[in-house]
Image 1: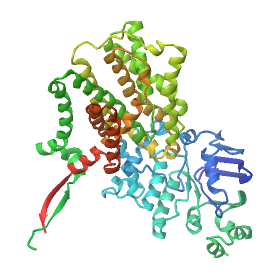
Image 2 (image 1 turned 30 degrees about the vertical axis):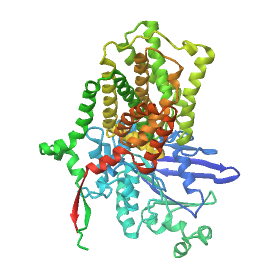
Image 3 (image 1 turned 90 degrees about the vertical axis):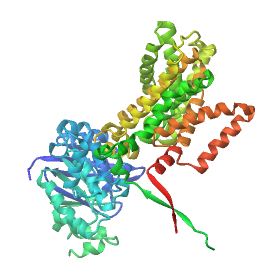
Image 4 (image 1 turned 45 degrees about the vertical axis):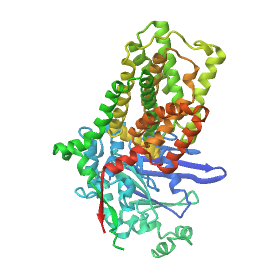
Length: 262
Length: 337
């Protein structure tokens, strides 16, 4: 883990009418870190990722990525700099086969400039590179799975496909919006080593999650949001024992899990 | 009861295996399986002008192919880029007027003014439609519908470009068979060209824009630029249609902005089969002659025409080509039970 700051968020605020979905949230992410963002439903986690990636314009506050101000830029410009995201509700290209889904990020100006994942895909057939990336991410190459239409893939593969689409862009930072949700325990167990591998390769990850136990296995640091405000930030084992966090989760689906950390 | 009962047994061929890659070249039979349907269309259209002897029906075939350019463009824009455009008449009108002006004012030969007008007016149309590109679905449809209406009224009210009289004295395309072959060849090139394009990398990005523009943006791609490219490609067909019509009729007028040019392509897409690009082409080859046949019924023509359309929409909403393609890839035989 290097010490250089990759993402800096200062006083991020987003108001939808009179409701503050985000209120003065600060976050500093260092290169190569895995940072978790947790919090009960409606605490502003997804709004945070929308504001950082440009899909929603923040009301107040600043976002800096690799030292450059990206507040309010269009999502494609931010993605072009190497900050990309997965969507909580998966958004593959349903009418295309899985491997052809990856041709789109490989066709982007960024991939043409710096290459796809690990710099590949600038030369040669983009569809083949697509299959290569899918194989790395857990699609069995010699099976029919990479060639199936995205609309006929099960959730587990679609989540991987979301991640693959981000990777094909050769990103510096990925914001993963609930990649674990809807997956079985064994599916998550097979996804964890992959995420660790990405971290080893120097890709910074921000993971928005409800599955705390799995998240804590890889997260270096966790930020807890509640009603749009930052509650606590710190190492996972410290954060989860904080009485304010327990209070925030009280009555929610994860309450039992949070309490078990006492 | 000693009657033998029969039922239909259906064998789906391994379509993927038979149509893909090296397997398609394994034997003459496999090659014919792929090439025959295409050859029937191409050779059929090439021979048709000689087979049809009456000049009137030759003209109908020409117009059908001109409409096909519009219909294929509509299908491409609606089902591969995700923009339902009712602006077909706008493409025809702009293409037609530009070509007429190039011919009458600058004295360009029709064979030069048609391609030149196609490119110039496609650029004009794309630039004018840029403000509409962020719109989706029915909103884009309504906005594009306004363009031809507006353009026609502007020419009428300001009395420019010949006003209601139109531009007369446009030079015709020389040669008896030239216009008809220009229409047929350009129609086939446009259709097969787009069919190729939608499976190339650029075409995949266009289809992705239709599927989910948000994740295309998250992949660092400017969606508006690709939508503009889609509109430009569609406009190429439409403007070429308009430019050649002007030289076929030797006249450019406000009727080039008539909504027929926006609506008939949609009807042809429904009849022929959407999301195929060939379907709309076939749809035009059916609908345009059909509307001529129905002239015998006088005022009832539109009534019958509407009933035919309704029947297609209700009974075969997938369209002829989708149906035929499905049947072609299947064997059906009667077996005794």
